[in-house]
Image (cartoon, rainbow, N blue to C red; front, side, top):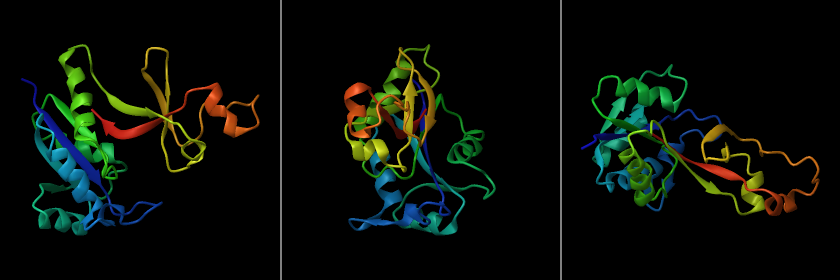
Length: 185
């Protein structure tokens, strides 16, 4: 049986929303919601928050979660996951972004289930963009897929740009656009 470890990178110093992991949502912090959703996944042998901030570390301790402190000079959440993973033994490391408080435990299971095909080396999750508000939201990460559903690249820009259609409200009827859901395995 494969061993899955879920690592949730969470840093305090976000440029768009400093302190986001500690933002209160319905009586709990954002990081607690993400952690508790991940703990519902039976496939996960461990769920660990990776942070460079003692405030986040204390908040995770306060709700009984597992947390590890990472160096503050790591440039990305993926680097935090890699930092912890090098001293752990697992078949699959799940990088669950710390700002996904509504993540479905079933989606997490589904993303991991594809590893029953031993050809799979990496997965992520996307969803179709259905509204102009989502399409133009600069905070959403968009994904370009090839014809087989493989990810080509991620960006905050609206891609592809439909230069022959100046009315962005009609773009959704002319092309499929996808947003990234904050999971990498």
